[in-house]
Structures are given as structure tokens and as C-alpha cells.
Image 1 (cartoon, one colour):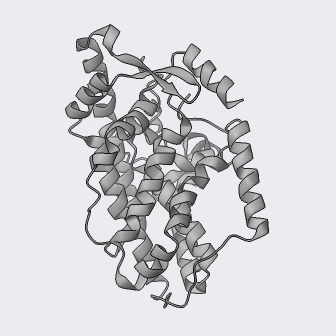
Image 2 (cartoon, helix red, strand yellow; image 1 turned 90 degrees about the horizontal axis):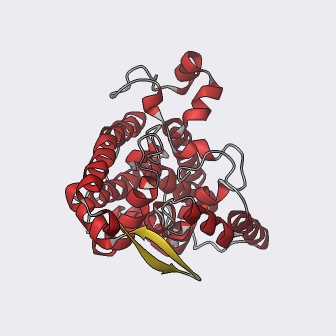
Length: 324
């Protein structure tokens, strides 16, 4: 089934990198893992003991898009649907936004910032309860959602260049670029800091991502006009398939034009994630986590994870796919 889907994507002329190479997998795992090392002494011990958990489960929200109906809108907000930057027509509080636009409309165009506020409260409550499983689950999930919000193309109607004749740019920006250059990124981003205004910080990220959309799209369009057409793409082996993707030369030139934007925003995600984790712990009363142990999944949890993986591999995204 997955091979058939990849072949179909190739025929349609889309960017056909495998899902596991995307920002949704490679970078999300890297973000969660590195964010652990921004934490203070009181937190880092517990997180280091469970480093593999927060790394591997960083991708669970993406897998849930294949199993849960209302999951997809949590990963994006097409905020330019409502009004131009700085999007002052969009109420920052969920209840006010529902009153202005209706809940159905908000879900149609994405609920990412409001979902992050909800996920933050889950982290706080898990820390208060000193519940290892809930702490790790919600912290891992939060890492994914906040990572998505740092991607400019998760904040626009033109999320895959489908409105500007640039179909495939979503995977190019968040997949091909990190795949080629991510191993050389600098992940030393400093120490997590307490966030005084969590909703304000979330909306600051929304606006910074939205402000970058024009550069992401226009630079690619300009480079495409200047670059030799027969050198924009190349073929690479992806498992059992030889597939078309953006060439190294085109990717490298675009990355330079963007002043290494993917690198900068990934670093921003890491320090922000560590700071959100730390802030949730402080808001929970700074509980002592030294007695919490490394968790091992129960048989029931392992079965649920296997079923989720199965639905991911064989299913179809329930809702809109940003790679469409």
C-alpha cells in the first residue's frame, strides 16, 4: 500500500520523499531529543532516563492523523485565510475565536495555537500528579505540535504551493533541506527559561512563522526561474524505488538564499520546547521528580502502539494532508 502511494505521488509530480524523512519524523525526533539537554538539573535526570521515549514518541501525533478524525487540524493554522499579517482579526482566546468564526470554521483552517494551550495544561497537570507516563506522553506530544508551528508552511492556505504553481514545496522545505543539511546543524541553543505568558509565546511563534511564508515561497519561485530546469530535480533510491526529488545543487542554493532558515527555526523550536517543558514543571509547583523511574510500556500500551503503527503504514490521513 505504501509503495503504491509513493508511486502515485511520483506520477502526480509531487515531492516524493518518504514520510520518515520529513520534518514530521527526522526533525521531530531530533527536536525532542536535543530539547532534553536544555533542561535544569531538577528535570534533566528524569528526561535523560527516558530519552528514548521522548525521542521515539515525538512522531505519535503524525501517526494519529491516520487513525483519529480530529487530529489533523491540530498541526496547522491557515491564519492568512482570515486576514493579513499580523492577523489581528483572529481572537487569541479560543472562546472568542469560536464566537467570531464558529468552531467548524476554526477546525477547517486549523487549531494549532489553541491546541498547544490545551496540551500545555495537560503537561502541567501531569507534572502535578507526578505521573511518569502522562508527563512523557504529553511532553512528547507537545514537542511535535510546537515543532509544527515553527514551520512557516503550517501557517498558510498555500501550504504546499498548490495556489502558486509550486506544488511540492512543503516537503522540500521541511523534509529535503533538513535531510541534506540537518546533521551539520548546531544544536547547542542554551538553557531553557521560564515563560511568563504561555499563550503570548504561542502566538508569537504563529506570527514569526507566518511572517516567513512569503520568503519561503518567493525565493523558491525566483530560484526556479534562474536555475537550469533540467537540474532542479534528481533521482535517488528510496527503499525499492528510484524516485524524483529536488537536486542537491538546487537545495543547496535555495538554503543559502533562505539564509539557512530551516536550521534557524529548528534551533528556535528546540529552545522554545525546552522552555515550555520547564515552565509547565514550574507552573505545577516544581515537583520533585527524582523518585520517578524509567517507564516501560505495558502490554496494553504496546498493543495500542502496534495498532497505531499499523494504521499509519496502511491507512489514509483523516483530514487534510499538508503534502497534498
